[in-house]
Image (cartoon, rainbow, N blue to C red; front, side):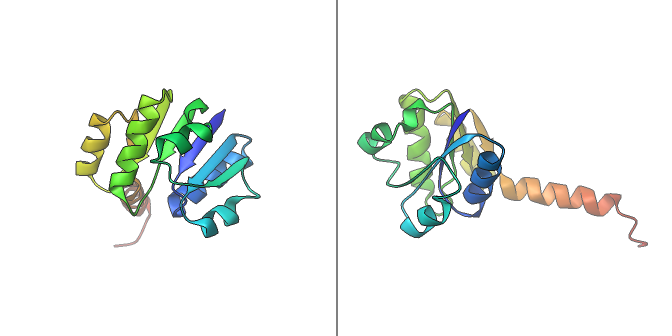
Length: 137
């Protein structure tokens, strides 16, 4: 499986490392050269580029992946553009990270096949874990 991950914040890095170490062919993309340098030896391809640029997107083969994960955390507009571009270029499955339910709706309308809200999931998971513990309270 060939997976592109756009955005190398904590979420993107953790996802890329997990997938690469499990045998997936992972391409990581970010505009920050330092983050790309950190990931270079861990993945199949690490590219410093603007993934919202149609020509660069096509030139790096991002349209030929099985899955693209858009997880640009500090620029929601760029994250939206990556989702739209991936769908326009024919990426079969596009997953996007959203910071809120409002953003989730926007990404869904733009064509994301799946939208993740990591902060919501983490909060729910912690709540379940705390409730299942015998805290003595």
